[in-house]
Length: 128
Image 1 (cartoon, rainbow, N blue to C red):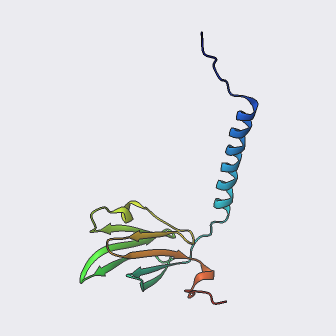
Image 2 (tube, rainbow, N blue to C red; image 1 turned 45 degrees about the vertical axis):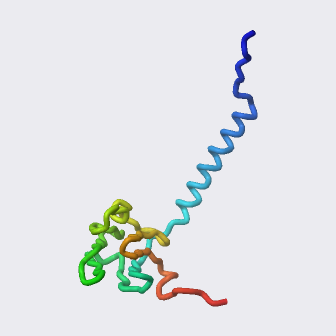
C-alpha cells in the first residue's frame, strides 16, 4: 500500500501569501517612521559623559580607569565605535547608527551610545 502524498491546498497558499504581506507591511511601517538623529548621547556606567552633534565630524576617545577603552567616530551623520579593547568587540561590529533610538552598547566597559532626535534633546524622563 502506497502512502498518499499531501499537496499544498488553497488555504496553505493563502496563509503563506498573508504572512508575506504582513512581513512587507511591517517592514515598510518600521522603515517609514525612522527619523535621522540630531545628536549622540554617550553614557559610561549610567552617567552622561558627552552629548555630540551628528552634524559635526569628529572622534571621541572614551576613557575608563585612566586608559582609552573605546573610540567613537561621527561621520556622514552617523556614529560608530571604531575601536574597543574588550575581547568580543561586538560594539565595533555593530557598525554605524543614525536613526533616533538606535544605539551601540559595550557591555564590558558599560558604555551606551544612543542616537537622539530633536524631541529628545535634554529630556531624560517625562512626568505625568
